[in-house]
Each structure stands twice: as C-alpha cells, then as structure tokens.
Amino acid sequence: MDKMRNAKTLFTKLSSAEKLVMIGSGLAVLSVFLPWYRDLDAWGKGDTFLGLTGPLSAIGLVILLGSGAVFAKMLGRMIGKKLRLLEKFDQLATYVAAENVLLFVITSSIYFDPKFGVNITLKQTAFGLFLCLIGSAVMAFGSYMRRKEPAKVELNIFEQVEESIDRIHKDIARENPNFRQENDVPLAERQYRESHETGKKNETLRMDI
Image 1: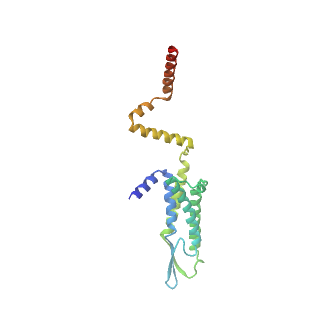
Image 2: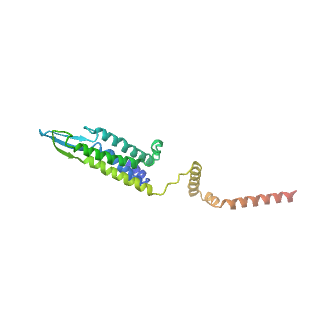
Image 3: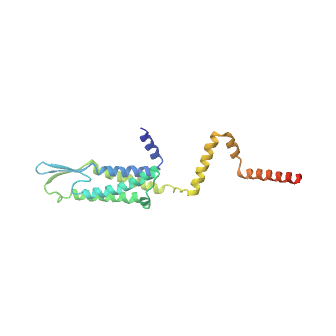
C-alpha cells in the first residue's frame, strides 16, 4: 500500500505532458504482449499472433524497444534519476510515436495483402494492434504539449546548496523561536549593528586609555 502511495506521489511530480508521454509509451509497450491479429485457413484452423510473435514479430520488437526507451526516460524523471543517454534525445517521444504509426500502417498493409497467407480465408485484427495505435497517439500528443510548456530552469549546484541551507534554517527556526528572531533580521541591519557595537567598543577602549 505504501509503495502504491509513493508511486502515485512520484507520478504527480511529472507535468501533464510528461504524464501523457509516460502513459502512451506504457500502452505501446503493453500492446506487443497482447494479440495483434488472428487468421483462419481453408481447413478451419486458425492462429492468434501477439505483437512479438508470428511472421511480423520484428516490427513488434522495434516498437517494444522504441516505446520502452521513452517509458524508461519518463520513469527516470519520475524517480529523479535521469538517464543521460536518453536525455540527449529531446524529441525522442515524437520520433518513436511517428515510427510506431508508420509500422502500424506497414503491418496492416502486409497482413491484409492477398498474397500474405494464400490459404488464409479469414483475417482479423485484435485489440493489441489498436492499443499500440492509441498509445502512440497519446505519446505524440503528450510530446506536442510538452513543447508548448515553458522550459524548466535547472538550478546549478550552488543554488541547490543555498536552497538546502535555507530549508535547514527554516526547519530549525520552527523548533527554536530564538533562532527565528535572530535570523529574521536582514543581513544589512545585522552588519550595521555589529559595526555599531564594534565602534562602541573601540570608543570605550580609547576612553580607558
């Protein structure tokens, strides 16, 4: 239950476009493990082929690799461990979605060609083939939305350290009121007070002399 809650929390950190890309690529990956098409020959015998089986299994393998790479890229962003190799390809989701649609068209044109399986009398597409198309469309739409989003400004290492120190100070201030009162004073005012106190000490020292 806690793992499900943590996964949901991590997923919400993604932008709306990244969520669509991740969901679409996940559907495309899932589709190759589902039935893509069925056929029935003249003797009444039929076969059901998955995306990764049958004479067109190479196409399913290409879709699996491409969509899997996009899913891995989004998963890395979700858990905060970006994959450097995949991050180099900024428009990876767009290219993979376009490739999947092209392979979908090629698969359909080959399978329904009369010369493909001369003794086959009945050919039917299955749910997996359409799930691949739906997932690719969602992935392409998410990639399009992502290009419309404002670019995220990455903090450099110094800004990250400064932000972490500021967060630690705030946590300490919640537990220690005296610390909060002291650190709520602006830096310029603290410097003025310190210099004023130093001046008083110097003046007192001169009077003593």
